[in-house]
Amino acid sequence: MKNALAIFSMSILMATSALAADDVKLPKTLTWTSFDVGGTGYNQSIAVGKALQDAYGVSLRVVATSNDQARIAPVRDGRIPFALAGSDVFFAFEGVKAYASPEWGPQDLKALNLAGAQNCVSLGAAKDAGINSPADLKGKRVGWVVSSGSLQANVRAFLAFADLTPDDVELIELPGYAGAWKALVNDQVDVMVGITTGGLVEQAAAGGRGLKWLSFPHSDTAGWDRLRAVNPHFSQRVATIGAAFDGPLECAGVPYPDLITYHADEDLVYNLTKALDAQVSVYSKADAGTAGYAADKQMFGWVVPYHAGAIRYYKEAGVWSDDLTTHTDGLTKRAGILAEAWKKMEGKSGDAFAKEWMTVRAEALEAAGLPVYFK
Image 1 (cartoon, rainbow, N blue to C red):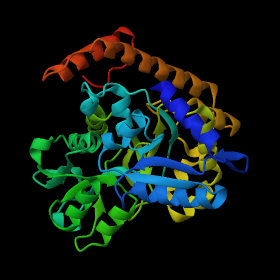
Image 2: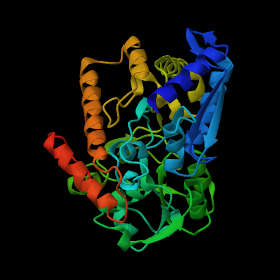
Image 3: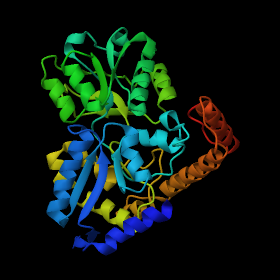
Image 4: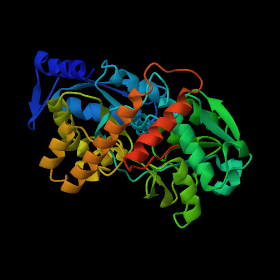
């Protein structure tokens, strides 16, 4: 698969007339998967695509998908070179939750861009639902996207902050992220997890029920300990932008979105990374949330490694350091340990598969002196 995707990526570069501007060389057409039409990731993709078209004559084809694995699978299989995904890439890299299955396992994916931002992840509640703090969530109707392990984990994490579990609320099963936010507007749910910016949350804020974002105070140490026990990749963030915002909000931060690949050609990755940085001042005018795509806004110290082509550009941009090299080397080592552990699961399946894998995985990581995160 590595060689196939590398050949695929290189053949694009050789078979198409590359267009150059500002020393950026890209094929005439690029493709990446993204979130539902109307979601933050999709809207940002459209803004980025317009900037790439205007600057380099590059057409960005955005393939909208309704769930996490549908975004990543075409990249894994070499059909599409890039995915604009969310924090689910952490679960994929670790081979946990929905990825603890014979069809998946730990994924050797790499990042081009892990965007920092002034927005955040939180729970948005309808104003008429009587929810003013996480403690008020008990008994409320909460959107539960059945196709998204990452969104489900986010719900569990925010409930854990309030010392609640999914059993303490009414989970309303919904097929996709966009539909879940529409369900809030239509009074089918009271609360939905999401990013504080984007078209869907703006529609919810403008709807008849209105919208408010719940605060998760950083001073609540016990609450944050419980939250991170579910989502160790969440960090504390103070958001300053979002739909229906009254002021700074203490909430959770993850890089979003996450532009990832598996084994795309290094030159292609380098040039795309460079183009995204060069044009950020243009496309961020169309979508302020994209300002975090800039090289100096990257969340470099996160939990998945960067691609060699991206690192090459970030070094040129002067934002990469020896400490980041050490961090990435550590993640690469972790990926190797997970891959070796996964070999022990070859030929196995059945109802007990996930439980056995999680045991094998934990033993391998503990033997290497690395954090397990999930057990």
